[in-house]
Length: 119
Image 1: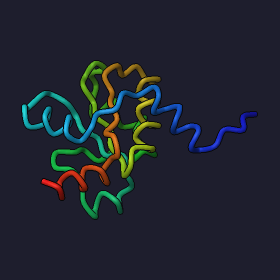
Image 2: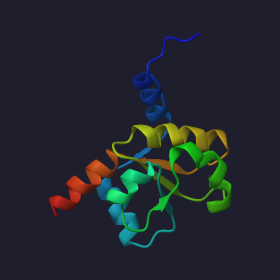
Image 3: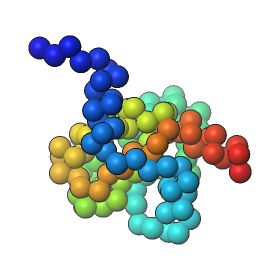
Image 4: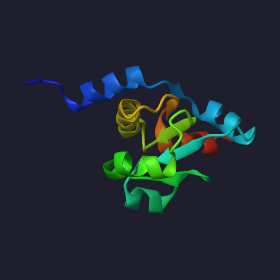
């Protein structure tokens, strides 16, 4: 039995999943680089606002839906949640499923909104 905390699990996942900053994500998105942005937040969070072009697959069903949405396990995937914790955990799960090009949006939707406000 482990004595890990949820924060320990998130830190471990973040160490395994490369981050991508909002600025870096904007650059690849603006350049039209082929990728899939997946928002893993809950429905009520999504309904309050989301990044344009994102696909909504809540964390609870990601492992079951990802193969339908992104069958190519080499496809560039950016995961995003509210602040980057849940999406890091999801990235770890996708790696276990064989996805090889997964990044975590650093700071999540909160950072994205902050970056938008400063533009």
